[in-house]
Picture 1 (cartoon, rainbow, N blue to C red):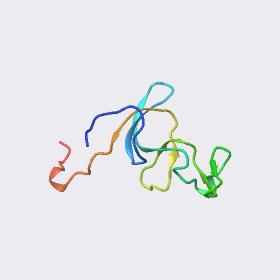
Picture 2: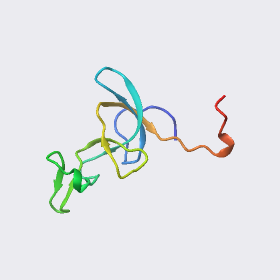
Picture 3: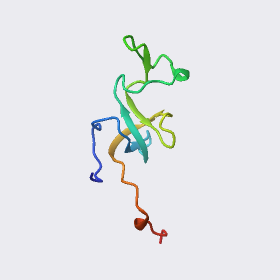
Picture 4: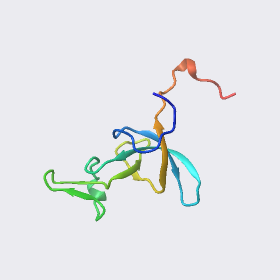
Length: 102
C-alpha cells in the first residue's frame, strides 16, 4: 500500500480516505467507499424514488456513488460534494508506533 492520493475510482468497494470538496472549494477528508450499481443494498426504511430496484433479486439498492461510513459500517451516508481524490486507509499503528503527541 502507498499513501499517495489518487483520482478516479477505487477497484472495489473497500473503504478509503476520500478528499471531498464542497461548493465553496473547501476540502475535508472522510472515510468512504464507492458503491457501484446494485452493489450496496438499501436499508428497507430508507427506500425512496432514488433507489435502484433489481427485479431478479427483489432488492432495492442505493444509487451508484460515494458513501461515507464511519463507526458503524451498516450506516452509509451519501457524500454531498465532489470526491476529488482518494487513498487506501492506513494500517492501524502498533503500540510501539504510538507517541504522546509531542
